[in-house]
Length: 253
View 1 (spheres, rainbow, N blue to C red):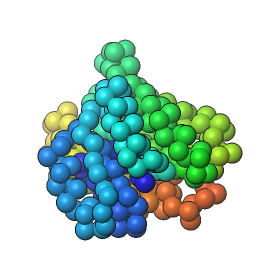
View 2 (view 1 turned 90 degrees about the horizontal axis):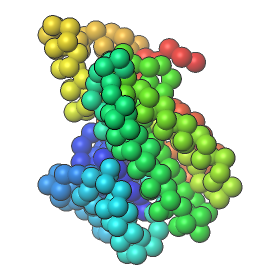
View 3 (view 1 turned 180 degrees about the vertical axis):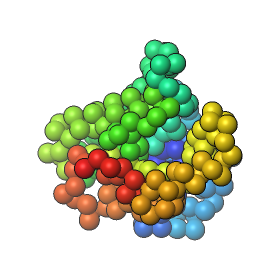
């Protein structure tokens, strides 16, 4: 049983569909119930017993109640894909402390809540996958994404700490670091950058694509393929890594 967060669009949606196609039972989680209902119909093409949860992940009490109900029904959740939309763009100098606290709550806080709720069932089965969809900013900070840079690094540190605590139970914790990927989030960042630099969006797209050795943006499906592999038994000895899936853009070793 796989819990896929942020499943209403982009990477989360592609991951939910691919995992279902690979044979997993999927619980799709996001805020938009309308989009989740459409997704549920598509998931039904790959077997029965899929479901969804419409909830704001930053509302931890409501989130806990929903997950506890699903655990009563399904008895276990083996795979958790932590995938949350990034904070608004902006330089670190203009950021307020409350913005950082809110982002940490939505990302690290939510991941901690889900880990605590699902740990017992993973421990019992001796199999578990915690997969965090973060950003290449874990390796190299991205300009004009001050709060996001800090939040992603905090998530990566949480994950690395957790590795040493739960690995003996057969549970792995890994981070996927997408580069420029064709999602609504990227569209928003392109528009923000174009407005700030007084440029046409096409010019920003061209500049960003040229910074990637493959000379193109990734697709949500390409990121989902890596997530699905990490979630599978084929990745049983991959633990505690932050894997860039970015077409070679990140220059850090």
